[in-house]
Structure formats: C-alpha cells, structure tokens
Image (cartoon, rainbow, N blue to C red; front, side):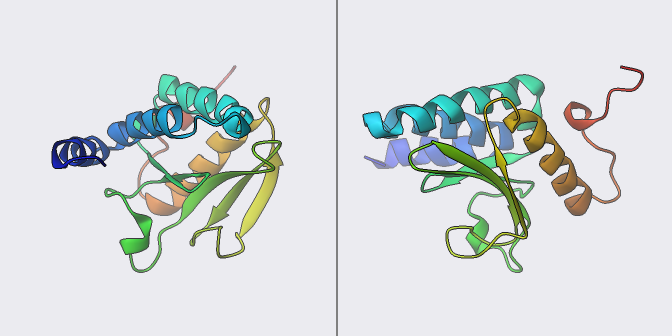
Length: 156
C-alpha cells in the first residue's frame, strides 16, 4: 500500500466476503503485469468472474498467497491468524500457469502437502471448484444447507 488512505480503503474492501473478490481481481489485474504471468492471469481472472456471476462471492472469502488463489469461509482476512488453521481450498499453478491444480488443506500448500489435490484445466475448473467449495461449506457450516449457487439442480 502506498499510503494510509489506500491501505484503509483496501482494509475496508477486504473486510467483506464480496469485497475480498473485488480486491483480488484488482490485485491480479494490477500487480502481475509481466508477460510470464499472462497465462496465469488468463486462467484466474475468468474463473474469479464466473464465481462472482454465480454468487459464490456472497458465501466465500478469497485471497492469494503468492500465486495461489485461496478460498475459505472465514469471516476475516489472513488465514494464518486462526488457530486451529481453518480448512481452505487452493488453486495453484506450475510453470507460470501451464499446469493447474485444486487442493483441499488446512495449511498453506506452499509449505505443507494438501489433503487432496487434483489437476484441473479451464474446462473443468469451475465445476471442480464448486464441488470442493461444497465440501468446504459442509465442513464449516454443518447445520446449514448448501448456498443456492452450490445447490444441485434437481430434475435438470
């Protein structure tokens, strides 16, 4: 952050789940200008926008850890401050966005092996992410129904 006004505006934005998505999109658009990141941005930005269009931003927080995109149901930013560490879903890439994975873990997958990790691509990413977010929701909100954007379509 360049000044306290920008930092305060950013902190207000990330204080809400929908705001965390807006902040991340702005970060990806502004802070990854290098051509090495073009493939990564080309994967991440459409996926984030598809999630927002589906309404997932109302139920999940999103952030980043280096080049990883991290989803949670926590009420506050910065998963490392929670004890015990909360469940999170991480989308990560290798080779500047040439290979993609989605992982389920309780720790940062930069430093710890995930519980589960599967490869994804641009055609499977949203469907697989919704499945993982459904599992995340069920574990973190066991007494609540799945949010409408994750609810199965009956008879469809």
